[in-house]
Length: 286
Image 1 (spheres, rainbow, N blue to C red):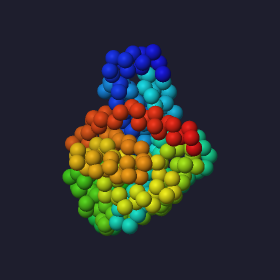
Image 2 (image 1 turned 120 degrees about the horizontal axis):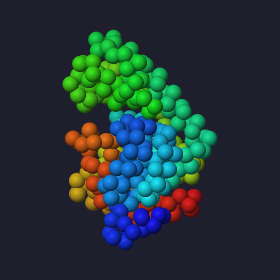
Image 3 (image 1 turned 180 degrees about the horizontal axis):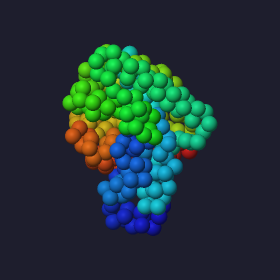
Image 4 (image 1 turned 60 degrees about the vertical axis):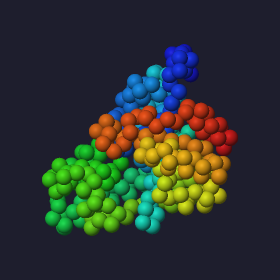
């Protein structure tokens, strides 16, 4: 920990962590380095980068965090399809250069690419054509996802907003939806554990029935302090976490300043930095 970071801690600054953020390596707006510098501006003491099915930003973010004196937590958010819903599993302190882990993420990327092509073809048949090349441009270096297709639909004038794109076309029940490579929540927990990481159930309010079975296969934490949850919901989830002796984590799910209409700003959720020490200790014990 750098002297400047210690001074901020002594002065009562940097006592917050944000353990759920996204960069341009997935569907965020800021580069990994810019995100770290913004966390410094926001007075955070610790930051986790948890891009969707991608660890491409972790090297850059880790280096930037060392330069500015922020405690960096390498992470990922794995997407799992389940009946009528999605379950997301966060992984903290993963060995992100692990060959098996990288191979599995490559399967995700390949699946996303083929899925996006099929969705674009479906949209053309539905009378809402968009160019797949434009979708790739919007995605940039990030794995192609539905948000990139939604943005292309907005640009083409077929819908007025990203939420409308999901509602009318590419949501789970939409006419242009295409199933992707499936990873079960239990598989995601196992994958994170194999990579030396600490698995945590993300934004769990709608999927609390998965907590008990996932605890049996190695779930370590619960994201009870999630940016979109009110005080009562957070308290209820904290009680659930304690029932199963899970680490209580949290974060803003920050994607960028242009997403502020429905998400908190970076660091707005009060997550104490002590949580990072708990996660690190569990990772070291694995």
